[in-house]
Amino acid sequence: MKKQLFFFFVLALFSFRAMSELTVSEVAPGVYVHFGQHQLPDAVNQGAIANIGFIVGDSCVAVIDTGGNPAQGYALKAAVEKTTNKPVCYVINTHVHPDHIYGNIAFKQKGVKFIGHQKLARAMSARGDYYIAKAAEQLDIKLTAKHLIFPDIAVKKHMAIDLGGRKLILTAHPTAHTDNDLTVLDKQTNTLWLSDLLFLEHLPVIDGSLKGWLRVLQGLEKQKYKTVIPGHGAIVTDWPTGLLAEQRYLQTLLTEIRGMLAEGRFLEEAIELVGYSEKDKWQLFEQFHKRNVTTAFAELEWED
Amino acid sequence: MNINLQKITFLLLLITPLFAAAAVDESLWDNTLKPQYYAGKVIFESNDIIELDVPYRAEDPALVPIKIISKVPQTKDHYIKKIVIFVDKNPFPFVGEFGFTAFNGKADLAMRVRINTYSYIRAIAEMNDGKLHMTKKFVKASGGCSAPLGADLDAAMKRLGKMKFKLGAGLELGKPSMAQLLISHPNITGMQMDQVTRFVKKSHFVDQLKVTFDDELVLTAKIDIAISADPNFRFYFIPKKSGVLKAEFMDMSCETPVSRAVCNPGKRYSYSYTVTP
Image 1 (cartoon, rainbow over the protein chains, first blue to last red):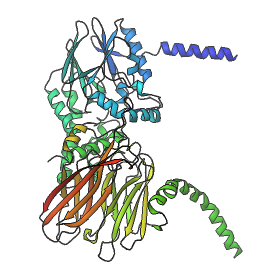
Image 2 (image 1 turned 90 degrees about the vertical axis):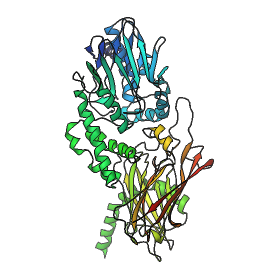
Image 3 (image 1 turned 180 degrees about the horizontal axis):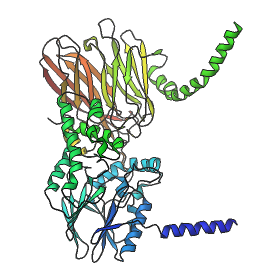
Image 4 (image 1 turned 60 degrees about the vertical axis):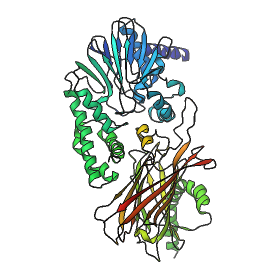
């Protein structure tokens, strides 16, 4: 009886693994995205909350972000294998946040090059210990230093990679959402993988520079893209209109915090007063807004 | 009489568990911090001299705004001489020691601190006659000391040493007036260790601070890694005429985050600002 039960479990486990490839949508020819849910990373979702995916060329595949835990990384890998028989040649990490890099280990093998912003490696080193501790505490996943796969290729400003008849232009941005934001432009379909430089529905999270982020958006706003993939939220096909909500939120913080500083008011007051006109327009506002105000206030009080 | 005794026993039984619970939370203070910093001293616990104003839940544990509100004016004969702040459960619980004089008018103080886990934060005021008064609050926070360095480290390092004064609106001669001092310094805890290369960063933080107004002492501080990046203090002084507010600080670098046995003094920085009411 016990044996049978054990056998049943093994079978169940295998069938679960077999079915466990991630659901992905083809948002443009050869461009696949798995859409994350707008949730706080926790022990139930185990950090699998971001948009992640891959682009398929004639000779190989570029994975763009690997997910919030190793299991999601393996599920993404299964999705790649189900979609195409071409091998993965690049893994592009758009920035250091755990929901985008914790699946890296699934792709660590010969022939796969990891690519990141030139400041990604430093951010991974500086945050590694803290992130690993937090993963155990908040996500209920056990990670070690070997799960942090560092970039093999660091992008200073721009870099082109070729997937075989398909060119991707990678751009390393100045400090915005974080200090290591990297975006991917697929020339063939004019699709911009903007990752966390763009949040829709989910409140934007500032972990870099409010002013820097607005500057980067100002530049992107002038460009024309057919499809834009945010780090959190649905696909954008009306660029730059899809950018307006985030821009409005960030601009509101900038204007109101500057106002508070001009009046000689303090951080504690700003936390309670700034940006509440945006409250009903976003998910996870309660969880991230006050922290955003804190980060932005600490940045803006050094303006002259 | 008998009934009274029963009543008292009953009441005692009722409150015993509360004492027990409080004792658990107080253990770090009672067993470690108090013996270390106040051996043999009597400390009154009350909110009559100073009170702490802290958020119950910290939105950003690396940057928790706290305020100490004084309940007595600073006069020549009776004033708060010193306020010492601790976060019991921080890896290095000592936050800072702040010195005041009658010249402050009032010994209110605001700053931003790092809080590493759910913990008591406490402030002990030492009066000019040596009496000690303690106030405390509980704060829910997590990860403040090991939290990643400031969002934009490069910008912070470029600005290191820069200072600013901001004065409260309606500065009145001869009245206690608020001043805010902003110091640009990443105040590195040294706990942002590199897991992968096993390279342990040294702590590097503002250690000594002195503020004067026309050479008269306004505030002195000995502070540590629990002060948030870009240290920010608000305090009071009484300007009797136009004059110069001057801030001087020294930073320090230590081999480990939690021991001050091996440290190297850093640089001295100073900044002056003319006050014209």
